[in-house]
Amino acid sequence: MLSDKNYISLEEIVGKEQVSASKEDLLCYSYDATNTTYLPDAVIFPANALEVSRIVELANLRGFSIIARGAGSGFTGGSLAVSGGVVLSTERMKRVIKIDEENLTATVEPGVITWEFQQDVEALGLFYPPDPTSKKISTIGGNIAECAGGPRAVKYGVTRDYVLGLEVVLPTGEIIKTGTSTMKGVVGYDLTRLMVGSEGTLGIVTGATLRLIPKPESVVTMLAFFPGISEAAAAVADIVAARIMPSTLELIDSFSIKCIEEYDPVRFAGVGALLIVEVDGRPESVKIEAELVNGVCKAAGATNIETATDKRAVKNLWKARRSISPALFKLKPNKINEDVVVPRSKIIELMTGLESIGKERGLIIACFGHAGDGNIHMNIMYDRNDDAEAARASEAVKEAFELTLSLGGTISGEHGVGTTKAEYLEMEIGSVEVALMRRLKECFDPKGIMNPGKIFSNKSAVRVT
Ligand SMILES: Cc1cc2nc3c(=O)[nH]c(=O)nc-3n(C[C@H](O)[C@H](O)[C@H](O)COP(=O)(O)OP(=O)(O)OC[C@H]3O[C@@H](n4cnc5c(N)ncnc54)[C@H](O)[C@@H]3O)c2cc1C
Figure: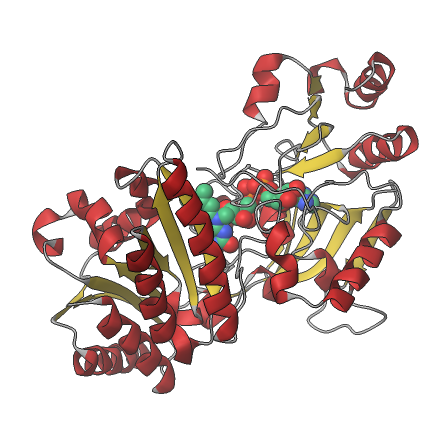
């Protein structure tokens, strides 16, 4: 519970209108994409870094928790107030401060919506590649905190590859600058890299300097149809082995296809798996790469390969792709969504292994995602009211993680640990490394006020969506 004294102090920092403890407001900031809810004690809407700093300084002094929140689209409970505290929303900090066309950089506030920022830079012939599928709602601050990736990561990398420097409010309230605004910079420890992906546990990002690149001149989008998941997974491995560098290589399995069939029932009927492949660059090279992709997919068993001819067709295809995650609820009322990654040469083993885990346990495991970088979103579908099925789903997660690790992979490529994967942290990371991480956390946040209960929590989380 936040005391009246603390609430009044918060009002003094941001003004009465920008802090709330009304039930309606708290509810709006109590959930994320895990569909678990925790009511915070209050929610606050600072306008700038100075206000964030004063809020955090107060929290540190008086000992209440602060949880940074962007759009609340996270899949691992990161923005939830699991043990109460004040949710700090960055929604008023959404200015693109500068786009530097000479140096190909941009300076932004954390609450900027990723897609809106991308539209701004693309209007100038520039490109900010990190494109989580949630880009139309998620924020740059949330993307930085989770080191978000997306379909384009296969060619362009993830958020960390585009963050040059940060402004951060530490858990003590101090404002620091990390990194540089130059392309290179190696002075001191790389605090920028430490902050990126730290899930809001080490500080609150209040500004970012991002790297931009020239916008690709042309893009070709292809849709390859396969009889089954093994053929599609083989095509992914073959495209990588053939040294072709698509800008997108997305896989969609038959369970996921069923959920989006309404977009085009005739075309998708009876299809075992799909690959969305995009190549981009100069028109001449794009044409050659598209032909190479065609050849590899056919050799791997594609029954048909279509090239999208107009912008509307491409838009519709991506709309269908983005709708998979929510559309999966057509299969079962609940799902456990994990985003495992394996080396790309192991993708066939991962897919066939997940298929067997599902069959053995009588569960639907729907898979889709960024196969080009070995990152598969596996969705274990179940009914939480069916205790036996829920228990089998839990066992399947553990088995899928064991399989992933045995293939040299990692249990999360982009969603982070948050609360949902905390119990599995030591499956992947050694105890010495975990202890070092805990010491880092203590060093940044000696009183443990910043986003407590995340990454290291032993508390078993409810992973129901
Ligand atoms: C349909 C759907 C598709 C998705 N697709 C992808 C995908 O393709 N790739 C991918 O990587 N993710 C994906 N996600 C997950 C999610 O969108 C990302 O993790 C995203 O980066 C979260 O951004 P957000 O603004 O919603 O952050 P939130 O969910 O609000 O917060 C996420 C974490 O960041 C912290 N945080 C937020 N802002 C700050 C800040 N300013 N400073 C410090 N910490 C902060 C929070 O405390 C929390 O720990 C998807 C989610 C959905 C619902």
